[in-house]
Amino acid sequence: MVSIVRRMRKLRALLAVRLGPGAAILPPEVTRIHMDFARAVEDGHWGPRKFWRNCLPRLKYHNPAVVMTVNRTEDQLGPAVMTVHFTNTAAAKSTEPEISSTTTKQISTGPVPESKAGPITVKTETINMKHRVDSEILDQLLKLTKAKVVQPTPEETREIRDIEEQNVKSARDAALMQAENKKRRREEEILRQARGSMDTN
Amino acid sequence: MSTARPCLAQLSRICLYSTRSTPASISTRSLSTTAAVAARGANAPPMESKASKLLKKASTNPQKNKKKGAEVSKKKKKTRTAYIQYDQRDLEQFTLLEAMRYIRAFEVGQKPTSAKYEMALKFKSQKNGPVVRNRLRLPHPVKTDLRICVICPPDSKYAKDAIAAGASLVGEDDIFEAVKDGRIEFDRCLCQTDSLDKMNKAGMGRVLGPRQLMPSTKLGTVVKDPAAVLKDLIGGAEYREKLGVVRMAVGQLGFTPEEMQRNIKAFIEHVKRDLNHLSDRINKELAEVVLSSTNSPGFPLSGQFTKVDSTITPRDLSTS
Image (cartoon, rainbow over all chains, first blue to last red):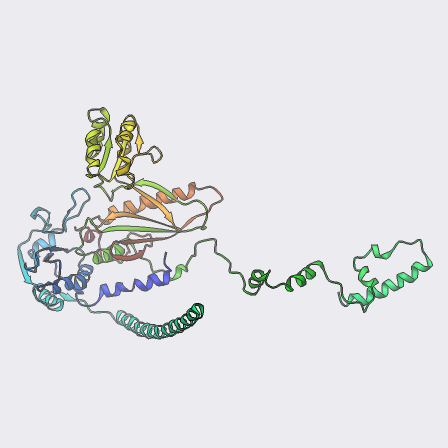
């Protein structure tokens, strides 16, 4: 296995999952978020993909019980839509989230059948994601659901600052080493050529 | 020795004198090994030992002993016999629920069937010696869609049992035909003992051999009762130690924390039992337990299910 220190450094990516764009707590009425978009980025499907990659993990971290599914189609010219399922306030308090089980597992990430959807969906809202960048999609979603954005605690801000400092330092070191390696390689190359010409003579 | 030499020289002189007076006495030379040196006198060049003589001889021919000389100048690096162990104090540990929460965030939007929980168990172990390898059935199997083909007469008792046990293909000649046409619609292949000759005659080895699907007695895939083996094969999982680490898939992404807990417990207990069953001289211990998944980093587990002050319930992590 890789050394512990290196693995732990990698694990600091966790901080990025807790904080940043998309770190928000959705109200209990939201039961499901479903995204539909194409596999490739052409024709305005770039933003949805970025949203899925960048913002959705944070949303999922802060709302583990909300089901979030992504369905990527081959239809490049088709729509890119996000569907948000709401339930009413009373149902949100009484019904518990549906349990996934090994016996009746859901095979695809497509829309789930009504019977499996947990609390009854009272209304659904859609957000058009086509030709929108990820931040725009996030703004629309936050406005629609009235979600509460998570702010970093002082300790977390300190950690973020530490990481940034370290990144700056490592970038500097990397540049230094790159120059050094380049120099070394050039010298080796010159030596090799000199030796090569000697051999041929 | 250099300080002792003049003293001994004096001593020998005394002895020499004494021999003159008493010729019948025993020679002192036989008493001391250094007496020979002493006898040569104090100013004689120091005697060389056999080893140093050899060295001198060798140094006159540097070409011959070049390798030996290099070794002396450059200290030989000691090779490590055990796998390196890191300082565990640097390790940040997670409870199962925390780790699952992060992993589910990393895996959001992935297909629940393609993303899997994986577990890595690191041992404190020597580099040589036997490795841990075994197979087990997890309480909740990870891979259930294994297609298994059983070669036996289609109207026999074995065929009926095999189908009941979950084989996807049963038969003899039709399977041979299909395989020769290149239609291989299975991931494992079993053969009933009585059908072995027929199968060998059909020349399936050329097609199945390179895919490692060919049943053979050596691999334990030629069996008397396919149904019994089928049960183990379906939902069974193999693990094997590589470089001091055992890795195995322990769950599907849709598993609830309780299901994961049962699977992980079963897996670790199974491996621990294997460690105890190794011979007495070999000492292996479990050093680290890491849970990861297809698209997430690895989370070292602390062994607890949840923390007391945790805000997250197993129920939250049970949604599909």
